[in-house]
Structure formats: structure tokens, C-alpha cells
Length: 156
Image (tube, rainbow, N blue to C red; front, side, top):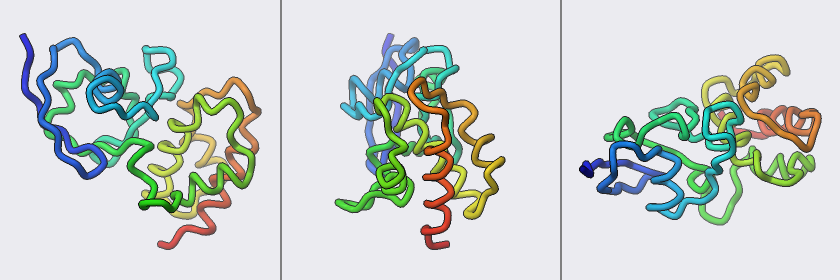
């Protein structure tokens, strides 16, 4: 039996009927057509599905949509300001921190969440913040450099 839930996603309110076994990833991708959130492993190990839920990063594949009822969610589609990329997104482009791109949205979400809480993190803090995000294409150095650069350019 489906349950009606209310989600605020990227500052827009949605009322959706969902089956109790559907994940937040499935609802975001299939019902709201927000396909920037990727489903990689489906068990919370890779971080490709990361979103910010009520101010903290979560793996949306581990959250049932009904558990997110009433939550405020930010996806990769919601962090740019109109046509202007978020500083983390821009830094990823400038530093070549994007290889195949599959992990990128989760990495950027984790980085944004860190910088929202700690605008000037150390390299160790950055590495800890993205430790739940796996990238198969790179050694993470360009990603860390991009986040460091973004932290220097962001206004806080």
C-alpha cells in the first residue's frame, strides 16, 4: 500500500505516493527525474547517491523514501545558482577532478556539505569528508585540490 509523503527537494515541495520499500534514490531518479543522483552499489558503500538531507550528507540508497517524509533534500541539481555553478562544481571543472563523472555528484555533495560546516578545512578533513565516496578513475588528488581551491574561493 502506497503512502503519501512530502519532500522539499531543491527548495521545491513535492507530494508523492510511494511504496514502503522504495528508496530515496529511486524516488529522486524515477519520480522526480533528478538523475544527477546516481545509484552505484545500492548498499551505501560508494557514495554515488549522496544527497544532503536536513543539513547532512546521506547515502540516499540507504534511506527509504518514507523515512525522508518531511525532510529538506538537496541534490546535485540544486546546488548551482541558476546558470552559475557552485564554487565546488567550478573547482572540479577547473582542476580536472572529473574523470568518467559517475562519482562526481556524490563527491560534490560531500564536499559542499563539508564546506557548509567548515569553510576552511584541512586536507585531512577533506579526505575524511569524502572517504565514503569511491572513485575508480583517479587517485583523489585532483578532487582534494579542487575542494581546497573551492574553500579558498567561497564567501563565508
